[in-house]
Structure formats: C-alpha cells, structure tokens
Length: 379
Image 1 (cartoon, rainbow, N blue to C red):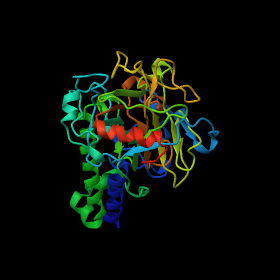
Image 2 (cartoon, helix red, strand yellow; image 1 turned 180 degrees about the vertical axis):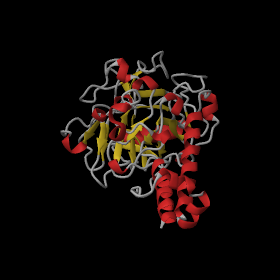
Image 3 (cartoon, rainbow, N blue to C red; image 1 turned 30 degrees about the vertical axis):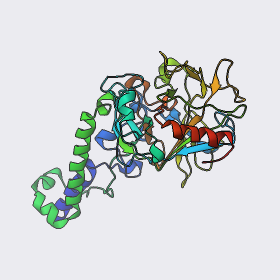
C-alpha cells in the first residue's frame, strides 16, 4: 500500500507540477514558452499582452461596416496557406536589407524567396506557391495559440503520502507502475524543446512573441473591382501595405484591423473575436486601391496608393486599381487564448494587425485580372 501511495504521489508530481496542468482552470495551463494567456494569468499579462479587454464576443458586436466597398468583378489568386512553412521576421518593404526588421514573425505565400534582402529583381526570379505564374509576395504577422502543447488529466495528491515517501520512489518504480509517466516525461522534454526554439527564434520569445504558431485553415487572396469606375492594371513591382503595426502607440489613423468569425461576416471588430463553437476566426485585410498613376512605392509606403472614400470613389488625381482583400481563417483555442505577433511595445493589441504585398504578376496575368474585374466576372 505504501508503495502505491508513493507511486501515486510521484505520478501527481510528474503529471501536475511539471506538466502544463492546473485543475483550477479546467486542467490546462500554458507551457512556459506559451504565456501569456490572459484567461489564466489575468493581470500578469499586462506587460506582455493581450489583455482580456482586447477580446469581444462576436455575438455582441453590432452589424455594420463591411470594409472597403467593391464592385461586382473579382479575381482570386490561389497561393495556398503557407503549408511549406515560409516564415521570417523581416520586411523588405518597410525595413529593406535588415534582418529581423519586423521584430515579429510573418507568414508568406506566393514568392518563395521573400526575406529582408529581397529586391524587385530577386522576386522576379523566384519560385512561387501561386497558380498561373503569380510571383507576387503576400505576407502578414502570424497568429499564435497561447494554450501550450496540450495536457494530461489532472490528479489530486493522496492525503496520506508525505514528501519523504515521494523521494523514496525511483523513476523506474513510477514507469513500471504507471507507463503513462513515460509519455508525460516525453511531453515535458518536448515543452522544453519548444521553449528553447521560441527563445532562439528571431522575432519570437525574445521579442515577446510566444506560443504555438497557427497555420491558417484557408487563405483567400481576392482582387476586387471598384463600384464607381473601371480599374486599371497595377504596375509590376507595386508595393502596398495595409494597417499599422504600431497602431497601439501611434493611434488609429492608419489602423485597418478587421476581425470577425465565419457566420458573422457582417460584424467586423478591431478586437480579437470570441467565436461560437464551430465558427472560425477571420482576419479581413483590405488594401488601398487608388494609385497616383506614377509611383510603385513612396517614403511612407502609403501616399502612392490611398484608400477610396466610403462610397468607393477614388480621390482626384488617382486611378482605381484592383483592390486586394486578404481573408485568413483560423481554428483557435476556446476563450481569449490566441494573439497576433507584434512589436514588443504593442503588447499584441489586435488593432496592430496588418499585411504587405508586392505585385510580381506577369503583365499578361495582370491584364486578365483587369478584364475579369471590369467585365463583372468572378475568376
């Protein structure tokens, strides 16, 4: 009987104090590398973020603005969802030639060579995940789960087992009496590996970006028409950004974060959406679409292409081009247990969501895009 109590207590220590368990919160506690989860640590996440107030139940978000208005025609570039794991913490548009210039990790689809040293010429020579020879680069900050690596069933210590009893039990005794302990130990080793990997990852834990990167369930890259006028072709190597990665400290002037859930797409919010069971989290990233007719970039990466008015009309002196909308769908942990990568001082505020694009479509493909849109087709 004493040995059984010893083994039971040892099992508790292996499966409780060392594994990502906490019976007070339903049996799941984030692994060391995966904090902060505001549903668990609460105020302890204030310096890292996000905070509980950064989340909103999508069912309480009123229906409203659907983002940039578009015409009937559209063209969708099919580029996958980054199944090949092309990621880095660079940004060749905003911080060219700088390694870890973004200080957070980006997911990429399209061009296979994109990094901080990319140039128009290198992208034109690169491979692509897109169909029809689209060598454009599309990228955005990764979304991470904060819930850790998983959990074993929690257990309560035997009231009659003392710490001395536990010390008398050997690892071999525990493994022989409880084979599952081997699995727990293996999981702990995996958690340590992940901790080390996240610490070393550029743009990762050292920058406050912790947790398990979530692969999008779907990525939709749709070029849409203008409701007021016909569109003209984007010039090759046109560079676009949307949103503001520093909106939490810069203010909302350039913020374009739009979050929602499947089944609730008429409800957009600047907060992380808490979706009902079976509903996916959606990030809707609308790009500007009124081009100055001359430049492929500008000093602030914004003034050469601006957003249309609420009715879709472009400002005087600009011309409508195909309007890119990225829609990213994710299956996330239940509750406020996920966050987008960010600069450290932005504390993973959802308003900092953003994305980048450089057009490297062949001219012939871009002409097809324009034709589809202006004819009101869906290609």
